[in-house]
Image 1 (cartoon, one colour):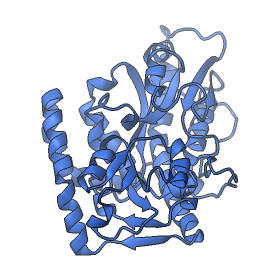
Image 2 (cartoon, rainbow, N blue to C red; image 1 turned 60 degrees about the vertical axis):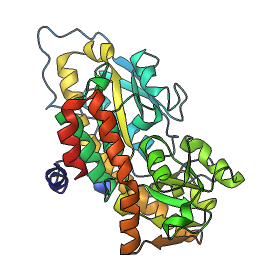
Image 3 (cartoon, rainbow, N blue to C red; image 1 turned 90 degrees about the vertical axis):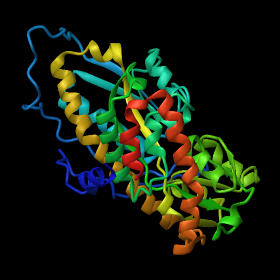
Image 4 (cartoon, one colour; image 1 turned 120 degrees about the horizontal axis):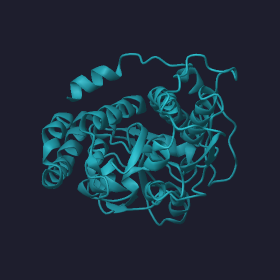
Length: 369
């Protein structure tokens, strides 16, 4: 399965616009430590009516005025993933000829990262974006994607999570309409003390969530759960000695300012899968031609987010070097030790998932192997 999925990720996916070019354009940064580095986000196309939009059906609900939707995102407005989401909202409005208008609320203004999914289910927001890992044990099947499979980049991770969801279609997401999913590049170690060998990590307090916390524990460190928004101050005050995340966090969350070292352990690189979901009742209220139009945009936009993650990783690496931080590469011998240490995370996950969702176990084993 892994081989086939990764092979699929190398083939080009048609885009309405050029997301790769859009994902590489720089955006000015704010000076606030808690503010986010911005990133690439695609621009909407011309405002002319879309001639190729699906044609309304006779039994479709009649829309006498534009449908107004709210979109809750925990990323701040300056962050590249928020910008990509705003561009998606604009594209939906454009392609539906203004029949759907989406107001984006960044920075957790409507619902915070942990409450985002339930907020969509309960109608606090019509659409929401957050991480599966922020709601522990709520999404046991989708957590499979977060395992340390050695993801090379965000585009691959994004395509894997969408392919996995489409194949498995887990019941844990049945109470919402999934727009699309995306996932960041390989999660690495960023610390205040050098970590070149496994014993260096012993008893270090490392910010980590979900399955990444299990990885940190298996490596001999102490996991400390917290959202990204709290990590800067926690590193600054010494509450944690490091964080486990993609290179993106070094600029996107300004964490390069409060760490000194990064350890490139991409061979055990995990990811954090993220959802973009819509309230099911609200989705059902839309005419079929509008649903079809949004679905087309969704199919294009997951890659936009994947490419944005990769551009953000590059920016994070450069920003960290500018801050005179060091990046360590693990030796081949050390890589094997780290891989051996995290095997228990794989086996524990399979045992847990076998009880709850036995039917997907063969698929999960194929992904891991």
